Length: 113
Length: 111
Image 1 (cartoon, chains in turn purple, green):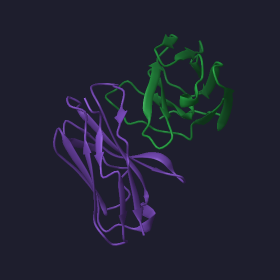
Image 2 (spheres, chains in turn red, orange):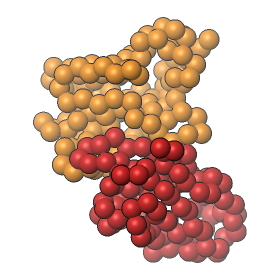
Image 3 (cartoon, helix red, strand yellow):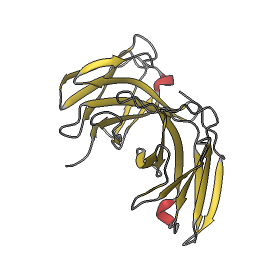
Image 4 (tube, chains in turn blue, red):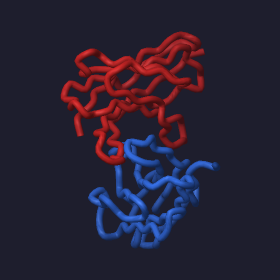
């Protein structure tokens, strides 16, 4: 398996623009997590899914952020409109079953100017 | 989630053993102790986990205190590729809970 795949790897956009981050989890995994990493706040959970259903989105900063998982092999994290404070590295991770180890993707580095 | 405390940074010489400590005095009886590490410019990766007994795998060993209030990640022979931030994380055993990351320990390895 190629591991968790994220695209794009880097994204530079202007304030106010819509940004869509994509994630393909490892085949067969039933959990998918979106995390964000900044220097100030470290690594923090945004949202996670089990069997394509959102379980906990309490980490999503505000209504500008939305995440979907239309099927078991694809998830998106959308920011609309983007703001400079959204600049961060966004990681997607997937895992299988109860207490399974999480496999992280390489991340998407987002810069909003 | 119960809190963990780790030193901000540690330094090791190459090919020497490294002991990375973690304190978790408020750990509950069902919390597992997980360790992840994050190499520069990469996503975190799983290292090892345990409940009560010491654990070994190809990457490292995990020594858990008898009262479970502390644990130590042991890298038997540090290499330059082990330079990373190491996170000690407690996870309950119900479902597949998200990871709650602290600041971790930044390990530097000197050649």
